[in-house]
Length: 213
Ligand code: TMP
Image (cartoon, rainbow, N blue to C red):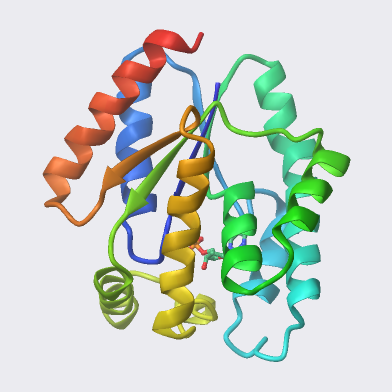
């Protein structure tokens, strides 16, 4: 089974992903957590270039191709072998982030992004995607609080430094993806109290693992 977590900056994705994995392990799933960008030794180097706040002049197409290069390494080295071995792969961001950030927010043609994914990766998509949704005003202020308090890396803030209007496009892009693929998407209201969000995710996972082998 292949599960991805998506959401804007500060949506609580990474913390909730850990809770979700503990929940799945308790149900007997052999889970592996991974992430994009990153997830492989080469991918971590690509991540450093992508998220470096000093990479300001990066061309949008270069950005798309670097995320795609990271994904190629990640799918071939990690995701496909794990899925073939029957593991449950839980991924912190995946392809949907490319459609949303490089497509809807950065303005690249989303059809080009879809075509690349079909051409290069046989359109490999998660069985389901949990979207942690909340207004970007709340998400960004949470993200900057974590950065200021040292809980998140200051050398990885290129996207946090984008404008509020960029993040509004990211949020509406995700909601549009969820509208287009309702059978794959599960939307979680991430503006609620952390405990409520965690329970909502556990409830959603219980429903899903009943239908996915
Ligand atoms: P994160 O690990 O804190 O979620 O940061 C990853 C950043 O990279 C986040 O701002 C979203 C961005 N991103 C893209 O723009 N395109 C992609 O394809 C992926 C996977 C992430």
